Length: 109
Image (cartoon, rainbow, N blue to C red; front, top):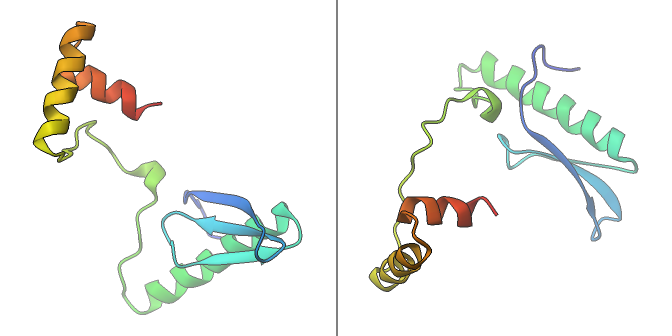
């Protein structure tokens, strides 16, 4: 079973504890699927998500919006201690860039 137009964010990684691949979905962090191959782990978690979405729909529960289709403004606030703010402002001034540019550069690394 698969969702039509499935735009959720999936990842497959190795689980050393389970000695299997684990399929994960960012929009449903409580769900996972273990399998012997990465392909099977992806197929399994996608099927599981489809079942959960179907169940949520039948119970009139809100369905998580896929990250891939959300619109982002490019702005978000981060609170840091005043000392960190000062240190970053000094580094930005010394580099001849705005604090925003310095923070953006550090976050994108």
